[in-house]
Structures are given as C-alpha cells and as structure tokens.
Image (cartoon, rainbow, N blue to C red; front, top):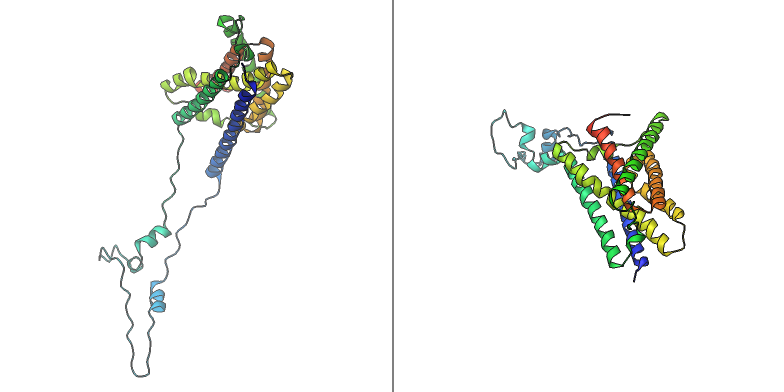
Length: 307
C-alpha cells in the first residue's frame, strides 16, 4: 500500500537540505568576491624595538653608596651564526618564535578547480536522486503518480522529441530574460556556470554525459515529481498551486546565481512545472531541463559566445 505522507516528509527534508546548501554556496561565492576585491587586512611587521633601550631598562645600573654594581650584558637566547654581517644586534636578541609572530606566513587559500566542483555536484545530485528513488520504492509510490506511464510521451522517442523542442524554447526564453535583465542593469551572476566549465575534452564529456543528466534527473524528480505529482495524486490539492510552491523552492535552491538568477530560475521552474502538468510526463521535463543546461554551457562556455 502506498504511503505518500512519509515519502513527502523525505522530499521536504531533501528540499530544506538543498536550500541550506544553496545558502552556503551563495555565502561562499560572496565571501570569495569580497576577499578578491576587498581591502588589504594582512598583518604588517612592526618596527623592531630599540634594543639598547630595552637592555638599559631591563638591566639597570644599580648604584650603592659604597660600591658600583656593573651592568650585566644580555646574552642572546640562541646564537647560531656569529657572522656580524648576517646577524645584527637586533636579531641577536630576538627569539625565533618572536620573529614568526611578527612576520606570520600568509594563510593558504584553497583553490576550487572545475574538476572538484564537477565531482561535488555529481555526488550531490546523484545522492539526491538515489534517495528519492529509494524512498519511492520503499513507500510504494506508484509510477503514474510521478509521471511515468505507458503513454507515448512518457517513454521512447516521442517524449524525447517533445522534451528537446520544449527545452529549446525554454532556453531561448531564458536567454531573452537574462538579456533584458542586463539591459536594465540587473546583472545575471554567471559564477556557478563558470566554475563548472571544464578545461579539458574529457571534462566536457563528463559534464555533458554525466553531470548535466544527473542534475536534470535529480531536480525534476524532486521539484516536479515529488513536490507536484505525488501530492496531487493522493490529496485534493490543485497541481498549479503545488507548481507555485515547488517553483519558489526551485528558485531559492539556485540562490548562488544571484537575485536575477533566482527570479529567472523561478520562472523557468514554473514553466517546467506547467509542462509536467500538461503532458503528465516526467521524461519530457527531464529532457527539456537537460537541453536548457546543455545549451547554456555549449554556447556561453564551450563556444564562448554571448547572444
């Protein structure tokens, strides 16, 4: 017997986790930009103290009415080289640890390579898709509730063909929306896409053949099948209302793309949700989602063209 309530609990937990990761990614990108263009907050070495004054203050001459106590000379803590050209008076009285404190080594920055980012995205999306599929099987969610049926659009070439055409139209609309945003001064943050852009032919094959399909499958399983198809199939709730909620979560899940990216992605998610509701096919929206992402990378990163 199907158990939609625990399944939806799993889907909601995944959504909240994804939103948390998106917030952390946005903060990481913002802090990286500030560190590159911010002020210089590095530690500057201070001027060395006057050793003669220090020696005089720390070893004063004590005068007695009947005798004079000679001043004691300070002895270096660690003298490894008596060459006067290489060891000044100031350095002779300075402990090595003091020099390390005054001149600390600059912090090492971790540089994220495209291979590291691609591997992280592939692992995250693959895990998310696996959890959704496992939860659907465990809680006996029927396939027709998520848009997998024997209809021509759900299996085979008809669904793929409609998905390709649908995705091409969505990509054109997405390009138009971003260009309009640029025209009014609302820049679209392309940092995430640039970070994912490979630098080798093998990387491009991995991106187009593994990573982008995983992204399309995982996000459509969560934001369309789990958050729209399942509750609409088991509860008396409008799928269009669910589409609004799911598209809002879909937009916030792409918060690393900036405010304009969130708005554009939210509109794109709602159109994908509409296609899912009208066709009843999960395959159509998975293919369309892949086409949108693949065309963006192919045109803007691989061909390095701006439309």
